[in-house]
Image 1 (cartoon, rainbow, N blue to C red):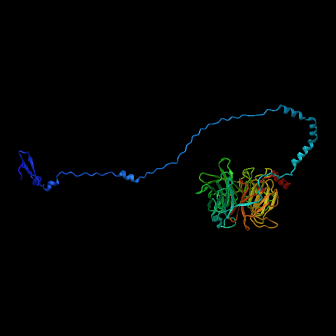
Image 2: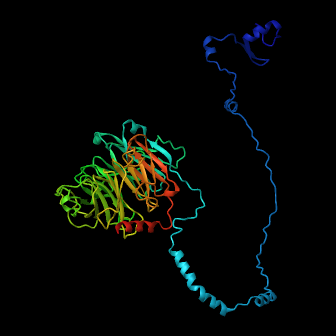
Image 3: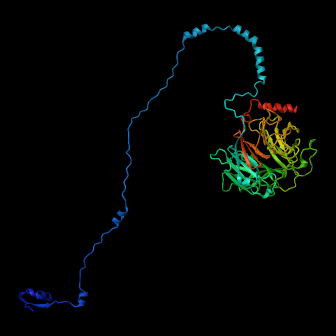
Length: 556
């Protein structure tokens, strides 16, 4: 060891690291500071170096972002000064030349004495000629028409539903809606088969729709029973009523594709027990926004239904045709009198008296009836309302059941004309004032299923025949016959061939809105829409008088 205060050599460096001196240069002592024991090292104070961790969330977010820029096109602006201008109207009139008036007055000189003498001489002759011209019929039927005339009857559409045709179903009824753009038909079977259990259809086509597919109806309604008749609502284009073979009545809303049924009668004691062959919409006198529904059936009942809120059709009033209460006259000797119900097959209301209607019955008679009748019917079946006997007059019968009647919408109340047709192949023109027909036309050796008066021509009507071929002495070629009494009162003006072979036409309807259209349905399951020529759609100047004159001549 080196003594304190002595010089330190270089070799003493290691030694100096092992010892430490305490004190000053005069006094002090050395202390050994060599390696410490292990425990001292474990608990010694120490300073660890620091570490900095930089946040990366900003850089990470910026790595996922993309910077884009867009620039609009150059916006051009212009400034223009505008100024309204003031307008002014002024009336300009030339002054009358006094000289010209004076010259005119000087030139024109009237001898009123001579003029009066001339008029007195020729007055009687001129008035006589004017009266002769007024009474002359030389120009009857002459009408100036600046449009091109269509002289032929053309088939515009042949509509069908293939699934119904595959079942050999027939078109039993056709109807036009209130706008005249939609035609509907019902499918069923009129010749044979188990009607009550056979599925049928109601189909509609909008003829004004673009892309019309004649074999794909716009609406198809499945019906569990054969549909025998149809009638669109007169003012609501989407509502259509149908009568079923089961005796039910159903009203469909064609605007509801999911569940189109709005009202139905159901099977109750008031429901018809036989097929419904015709339905008509009637105005409701108490509620203008509502309409009642009338139905006729071969069970002899004519029923009027009102709509209920729960979707039911409830019986409002009714009539019954009983043989014992039909008016008797000398022409009804063959009728089987008694209390048996007389089956009703068709009905048509007068266009001038809402209480008067004509019905056709299975016995071959046309009957004039009234809704104002108060006599109770001798009907034994239970009903929720009393049934009345409406028949007032029986007309000369057909040789078989009457299938269709149609009241004229044009005749004056003096004549009250209507048409009827039946299984004897004849069309009768009747006046409601006499029992004998004014005209009887033999059209076919087979049935006539439908007759309709034209909505625009008082002298024109159409008839649907059950026979397509003709007999030289008896009938006419075609299935749809168009008559014009102005041309002939004995033979049709045009006979249209509806289908090949002896295929009967069961129904037809004129279009009231588009009067040039006529729809006819046949046994093949097709509906043909015919465009009529102008001869059948344009009324002559004295056509009403011609019809009255024709009826008066026949009556006299």
